[in-house]
Length: 434
Image 1 (cartoon, helix red, strand yellow):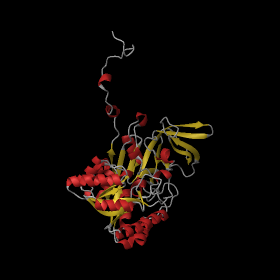
Image 2: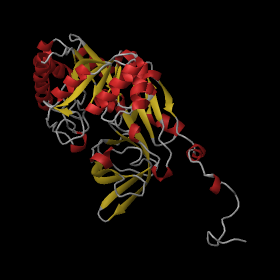
Image 3: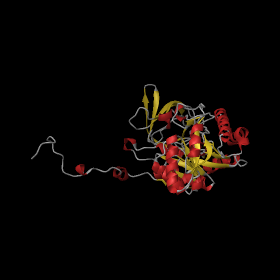
Image 4: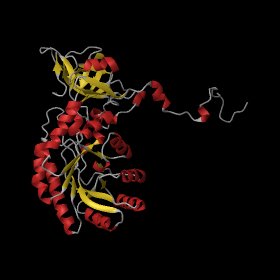
């Protein structure tokens, strides 16, 4: 993985040895490489330089403020799906005029916050949401820019849990049913119907499903214009995949070429929402070996990282590369091993029967391709502390989210008054008096 190369047999993030960060902040931790973030954004943006396009980074992939600001400083807008993500985008310095609000379940409070911020566009996913947005905008004496998310009923040919473009998902409004929603939007006050949105899934490694969806989108635009709607913006969502193992995802330039061929004649501004494609391979999770044991005929490597730190393998059966931080000799034997965490769940497994070199207690392992849908999905299950995040820039690094203390973990809970007394609870029945 070129973003985290070996130098003198030590894994590095740019000019910083991973082991140096581990010694300073402990394990497990996430590490992000600034150069990798910049390289991928610049490659993606360059592919669309000849298009009227806005690249809105999908914050759900990795919402760390340092990551969002790094991309924002390069020109990225933001695709958000909650008020929290909206606030993160604004706090990171993203211009509200480059923020798109997606998501199937926006509340009145969230919509109001986005209206007050003055965002670029709302991607509406239901008639009820459309009516609520209209009412809130009317009260403010403003006009909300709207794109309605249509569902093209196209299978993204990706994992079932990250497919969003078929009629059996919760997302969008089936086309052509959405024509009626557009007609209502045109009648409602406080709305400016500017475009059409579509998003069919994540980790796509083939352009064919995207092309099929965009063909439906193009036909929809022609019909909607014939219906009298001034469609001038197309939100194409995100979804381009990355390399976890042997995948061969399309290059941004090929993606842009396909879009130009299928949709270029419509003369619309494009909104693109890459997430994983920008950050996925720019991060690793570093974990330390607690012990190695033998179970029946297999080797089990127990590490201090766990499923609550990186949920993807448990949730999606996702494959992540795993490498030793100290490079093994070229002739070291690679034997199958299960890499597991300490959480009390059988699903707390990062890899099964993975060929790995000899590993000993206290060795460091790096779990690769952990920049997307990783730290953002972490929890404190088993009362484990959230994992810190570090960012490397050239020969320097900074902790961009610290590990909380146990005192902070416990302070998040508040005992009710009837439990706050230090007096021992009576051993008698609740009705017993003394």
